[in-house]
Length: 437
Image 1 (tube, rainbow, N blue to C red):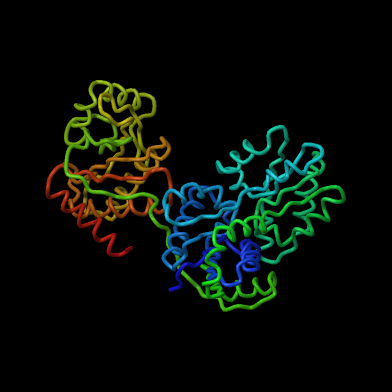
Image 2: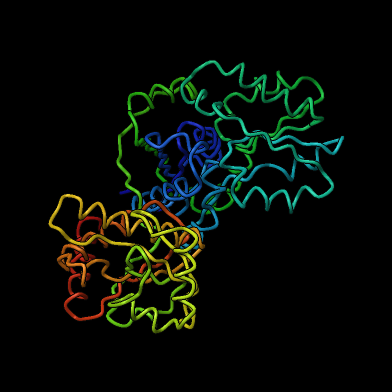
């Protein structure tokens, strides 16, 4: 394993522009480049999906010896840069930030255009950059679907370039920011399409300069090596490097599964007293809280829980499979109760998918509420007859898979009302850890 390396990643070839600039400044640095081509392009994926990939690849690079990670992708920086710094506080992260500040200083008409992916514009980073650096300047944010993929594939980009560039120029922009690292490889075409009098700003060199500032004091001790890895086809990636950079290095394939965005803990105790944002109720379809966990929640929450449950059913009808009902938590410390209907165990092939649907519905609803913490019981393992060991395994595995997609939830508490159920949850979580590390 390489030690004290610089890890660089992107969804594909775009980050190679940044990597080349870093190498020009740090001749002795050990570099590791990951192209996440199995999940490309990031710009056309949702923010949660991109964030999950950023967590996974950063964790992989750190495990391979990276002490500095360059997020050479605007979409990934927009989705995850702040969270990455929080999650890995001992690692230096350098991210891509749309070059709005230099563009605001360069524009003569007070009008700048930003060409980027939709995911870049969705993240908080872009809004923050505009708020900090573009006061008194108009910013035209132009999403460019298909352009990054065309660069990745070596396809004809002229139609995309002409259309997207003309859009911002016709609207008055005299300065254009390249908000995707893929666009660095076609910067000359964008300049030609923009015409005289329009400045095109590529931030790749500025990001490389920042990486060099972070690492310059350690460069002399480096190995000067570069490893190229892809989650896609290594032969294809090697050909892309040859086409774009002019060298044909060895490329290795790597599998990088998503990592959990939060943790799972097992708690023995009363679910109604857990210090969480959301309590999950194992309910019946009519939200009649007559026994088990449902009755305990109704007692602890007071009349408000029953009143809200009746109102929900009156408006929406019985709670269907795969859907959650959200009500107040009443007198409990939690903000909300999320009610889901688990299966009545029939020793049928439908039992497990039904339970999986219930767990996913509960967590999806919690995420929609912006919850950071959720307490979940052993759904269906009580009066509904699901064998407790099996129910706890399904619940833990489903929660683990859900966390690997990324999201706002940072802790899922699997709450057991007795020692036997706690032991089943413990065994299920231990099994997950033994499989995933």
